Each structure stands twice: as C-alpha cells, then as structure tokens.
Amino acid sequence: MPQRKIRRFYESDAKGIYDEDLIDEVGYGLLARCESFITANRARAGEVPCPKCAQPVRREEVLRCPCGWELRWADYFKTIQHKQLSGAEPVLEQFRDFVNAFPSARTPQEKVLLIDRLIHGFHLYYKTNGPTRPVAVNLIEGRLGDVVAFLDDLSYGEKSTAGTREKLAEWNKNIEVNRNWYPCRREAKPNPRMERTRAVDGTVATSDRDR
Image 1: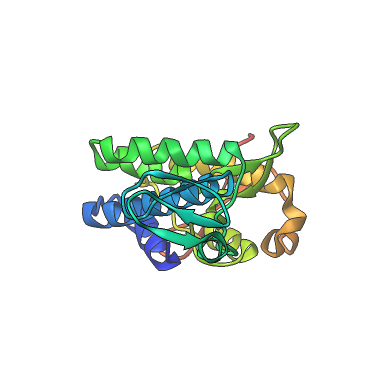
Image 2: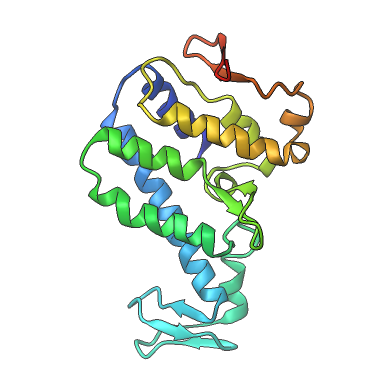
C-alpha cells in the first residue's frame, strides 16, 4: 500500500471527514495485500492455490492442477520471495481477521477502526508473546525503519475516530520495547510520560497521560 494513501486516510480522519471512497480504497487495498500474504504462507507450507480455479495444488518441483495450469515451483516462489510476504501464525490470524471483518463492516467508523488496528499490529515472539517488528512493514511500502518513522508522523486530531488515539498509545508502548531497532526512536530522547502527536496543521501536541 502506498504511503501517500495511508497519509491521506489519516489526515481526513483527523479532520473528522469520512471520505468513504478513500476508506474503501485503503481498506480493500490492504485486504488484497493480506490475501496475498495468506496465500504466500500457504504456499510455503506446501499447498499452492491454483490461480485459475483456486483448487489447492500440492507443492512439488512442478506445480500441476487438474484444470491444466502448471508452473515450476522455483518460478512460483520468485513471485513471493523478498516481498515481505512471510510471517508466523499470530500475524496470519490478524490478517485473516481483517479479511473476514472488513467487507461486512457497516459504517465508516467501523472501517476506520479495523484499518487502524491492522496497521498498528505486531509480529510476536513465539515464547513470550511480546511484540517484535510491526506488521505494517508487510502492508505499507518502505523498509522497516522508514515505515516506523512514517507511522510516527501520521496526523491525529481532536476529531479523529474514537479509539485511534488509544491504539496509537498502544503502538508507542510496543515500539518502545525495541526502540533501538529504529533510527527515528534511537535519535529521539525517551520520555515515557509524554505522548507525542502530530496535529492536522503540522504542529506537535503533547499530553502527559500519566498525571
């Protein structure tokens, strides 16, 4: 998903504007990306959905479907390699939840919250269930550090959809666990009591929520 579309999405929401065309464009774009992620992981696990008839094809040196489609596994693998299309079950569960929930969301507010929750999700350590890298790197264009810096700079305002600021606070908490991974966080002076939010007009508002 291009960063510019995500930025427009948050700028509109910060102004209290529900641009339903933009919300659907972002939402269904993310849904398609989630489906690609799910399909790629299914293929790595040994079952490739046939692109012609959707029937499962067993992973072998040459993929062959009864419908007539066939392709060398090596050639198929090139289409999913080095494209941030791999992740463990906790990530797959997040993506499946979004794929199942977004099409049935009835209001713009519901859709905004589903998109916001997806974008601010995390990969998790298998043993501790603690956060590692954000799943946004699997969804939004850019390298990991660039994506984190981009999300840090998104617009929020007093008219933002209720619940997005709470998700932002949770995001900040999870990112801080591994702050040394991200140049934008290493360079910033840590102040866990302060929440930093970029307002719609470009100014920076801070609030001390622990008081």
